[in-house]
Image 1: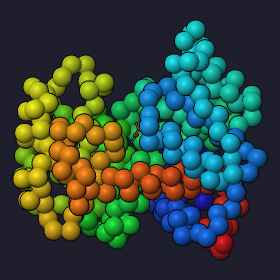
Image 2: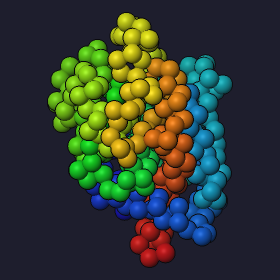
Image 3: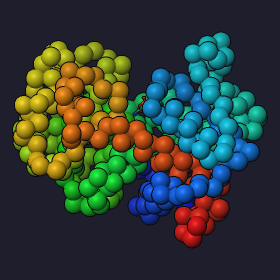
Amino acid sequence: MLMKNNLLAIEDINKEEVRYLLKGAKKLAQAKSVPLFLNGKTVANLFFENSTRTRSSFEIATRKLGGSVLNFTATTSSVQKGESLIDTARNIEAMQPSCIVVRHASAGSPKVLADAVNIPVVNAGDGFHEHPTQALLDVFTIEEKLGSVLKKKILIIGDIAHSRVARSDIHLLKKLGAQVSVCGPPTLLPPEPESLGVSYSYRLEDFLNMADVIVALRIQLERQNKMQIPTLNEYAKFWGINAERAKLIKKGAIILHPGPINRGVELQSEVADGPLSVILDQVANGVLVRMSALAALCMPKEYEEWVKYG
Ligand code: CP
């Protein structure tokens, strides 16, 4: 069972809680019929930033569990008239949803919101901070393709400094015993990358032929004060994966990307759509992992029972 009533950060949960959520997701994938854990319940999706995958998969996850969805979009809401995050959340809570899923550009805002309401809150991505369900679906996908992440060599490429996916992935992969390396231009790595507990290089070729798993990150143009790389072409030349560079990748390795892809920058299309790519499997697995998180938070006892004995 989850120890807390929220899922705000991978940093906050322990290995057993992670394994519980992943086991539940696997069981949901294999179940002939899934219990309607959210029957009669509503999940409120509060998105203050754009999303395709996360928002859609939370919505599908909710519906598959028998629940209904309230979709709140900041750009068409009273936030535009100056209503605060907390007032927004309290007003949504007054309509009695069972859970709030929130994405926000400010790191820490899901925690602020969770402190202000009395229902579970799931972080769907907050600024540079974390994107916990993305990390869970990444690990679920790696283990589905390659077995346990324990001792696997994982290479994360790109905008480590601005990426909440990188932070959540690193926390989760290290928690589960994987060996994590990061690579990218010096301006897109944090000042002391080793403080994250990872090895690092500015040269892709140093790690490319050793990694079991390659996670290519999106260049987070919207989170940089100014371009921290000379040009996107330059980035593609040194840190992007094209067909030629893909020949250096270890046999059996897989490539992940959280999406959306800047095609021709992080990945050339022949790689993004090629045989090593598991990017669409990640998207499919996002529904399962989010079903697991929602059921664990909204119906903790019933879900635990089902995961154990059902
Ligand atoms: N991976 C991810 O967070 O994608 P979206 O921004 O489309 O939700």
